[in-house]
Amino acid sequence: MVRMLAICAVVFIFFGVSLAQEFELSAQFPKEIINASHSATDAGVEMYFNFDVIDTINEGESCHPVLGGAVYTSTNGGSSWELHPASVIGDPGYDSTYEASFTNPASGNVQYYYKVWTDSTVSCWLPNNSSNTFPAPDNKLVQICGDPTGDQDSIMLPWDNGYRSYSCTDLVDFWVGYSSSNLFYKVTVAGGGFPYSHTEHVSTGLASWCPNSEVDLDVFHIYTFPIINPNAPYPDSIFYAAIYGDVSISFVVVTIHIWTGVYKVHKLDSTATWIDYLSVYTRLGDIESDVSGNTLSLRVPLSVLTSDPDFGTLDPDLPLATGCGIGTACAFPKEPGCFIYGLCDTFAYSINDGSPSVGMYLKTGEYTVTPSSPPVLSAYGGSAAGGKGVTFYYCTYTDPEGDIPVVHDVVIDGTPYTLDSYGDHTYSDGADFYLVRSDIGSRPTFHFHFSDGANDVTTEDLSLGIEENIPSSGFTLGSAYPNPFNAAVTIPVNAYEDFDNITIEIYNINGEKIRTLHSGYLSRGFHHFIWNGKDASSGLYFVRVRAAGDEQLSRIMLMK
Image (cartoon, rainbow, N blue to C red; front, side, top):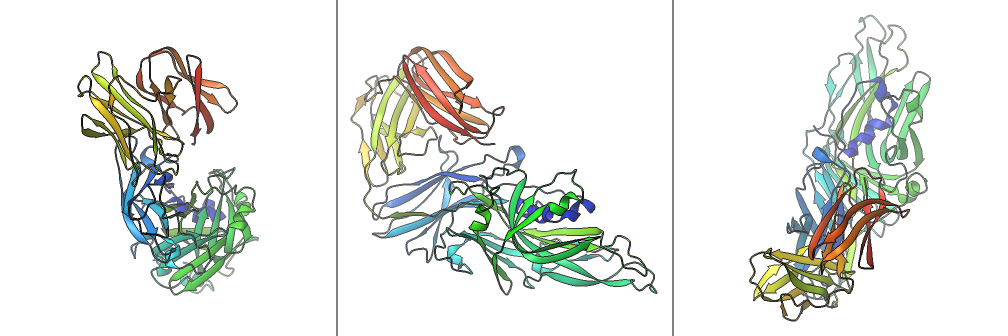
């Protein structure tokens, strides 16, 4: 059974793991949602939502495919939500872009949030519980999973007393939410509520005449909600967790007490000793809890987290990694004495059940139904590559409100063809579109047609070789994609003429050149240059293109 990031926190909390059995967990981090945008906000139009899904943390076989996506909308202030399935567009430049649509109401405000999931992760925006209602109602939370019953793991009791399984450690459902001041969690288990512990009457294996041949053993349950901020200064060595439970275990001369609250946890490596585990966690503050039958609700003050300097600053454009893990533990003497029971020196644990790992964005989308401004087309035209039978068509789309183009076509001799994107899905500052064709006549007539969902814009009719509105520099540095990136980034350059000498270089934030991607002749047309940053450090870099006395710069972000 694959265990996710959410459950790892349960193990790290207890220092006794190094004294007991080894374990192997798979920590799958949630994917990221970027470039979230929508079409025009006019009344009664078909409204389109787009969002890109990337993975800059997991690599190789750990990168699980997306199984589904959705957009949720509310037209009544978040009192109820409507689900709209999202599917991947799949066109060039939109190969990781998901789209959903619904019909805009005649007036009012629309709230919305995004959700995407794999077999082991969920990433989502969230409804805003702005009133801080607690326990948080379902319409202010996002459901992360509906987990099957009966799939929890049991704990092995010491001295060959077999296994025990508890319905209170069988996760059934898990929800998350937020406000400007709190995180909200809700978890439901199969039964038994949320007891801190069970007492098991077990045999120690001693002779029946020994006073300690049978003893009562405390088996503790702990419900852990890890919270990892990607903006933290030490994300690989420190994480945080909200914990519900009450565990008090004495080891030799040390008593470990963990009770409901927010904890700062230091990760330890395989060389750690039991002494190191004595300082593995620090309790930072209280949280509110509410148990109603088999449902546990928590309210976690964000101030408790952000007041610790190692937590880092909150950025609504970056997801907190979180989840729910349920664990069971007990402590006992390895060799109980016949007449003296002895102090605990051995620790057993079980990670019983857990949710997928969650990437929760502390943000909610909202817009007012209102007429939108029409987009603007610029830097458009077409050119043929001499002797190659290939024709390039290109156009830059800019929308004042950043609305997505639901139509992005070039109409050639009356036939529309969809233009591809460079992967730049921020439209307020201009996004370049292109088409490469090899089956078009020698001098076709064409024009460009775009729509933001409410406003159609077209160019005048053009003839191949007659190009309009071309930038004076003679080239355009397109938007690199994906951006941010964690391995390779593609840098598009559109040359409107042949250049005898053009340079394309990468600089770091200190202004030092670290790579030359191209230097020399570049023919007219569209070109793509790839930089593999696997040997570079995470951070901000600049792409610099120079030719014929002109220069253009763009920023790219490497995240590992």
